Length: 242
Image (tube, rainbow, N blue to C red):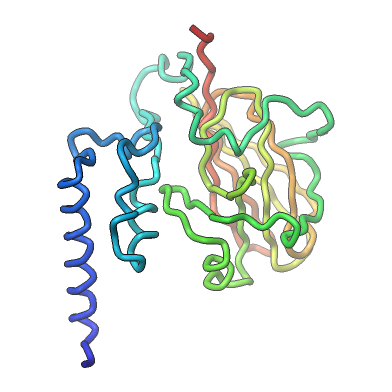
C-alpha cells in the first residue's frame, strides 16, 4: 500500500504524540518539571529505549539538556556570580583547565591541519542541543560550506558552558585554503568585538581558544567571502567548593 506525502506526515506526528504520552505514563518529568531543558541530565530512565528504533534517536535529541541562562536581562549580577560544578558537568569533555603549551596571538592559536580520520566524532551537536551522528552529518552537509565546531573527547558541539580560564579546542572546515577573518564578540554588560586574520588550510583546521573572560563568547570565521556558523561559549566564574 502506498501513502501520500500528507499521510506520511500524519503518521509521523501520530507516532511522536504517542511517544510523548508513553513518556508521561512512565513517570517522566512533564512540562512543569522541565529538568530536561536545564543543565542537569534527564531524570529517570531513558524513555527512548521503549520506542520504535526509527524515532529513538529523534527523542534522544529532544531530551538532550540545553542550558537556559538569563543573558538578556537588565542588571550586572548575572555576570559576576559564581556557579557550581553542576552548571558545567554536561560539558566537561570540551574543555581542559590548563594548557601551558599553547601560544595564542589574538583570538585563537595559529590554525594547524586536523586529520579527521584519526579523531572522528561520534555525534555532532548543534546550538539548540540537537545531535546528529557524524556519518549522517558528513553525508548531508555540503562540502562547500565553512563549518566551525568545538572539539570534545568523543563528540563535537556548537555550544559549551565552561569555567573562566579553561581551554577549548576548535575545529574549522574550509573548502579552500587562504586568509580567514576570525571574529569574536564578547557579551557582558557591554559588548566587545575582536578580529584577526589567520591562514587556513584546505579541509579541517584546529586551533585553541582560551576562555579567559566571563561572558558570552560568539565565534565565527569568514573564508573566500563565505561566513561559517557561530559557536557560543558561555563562560562563568566557578563558585568555591562547599
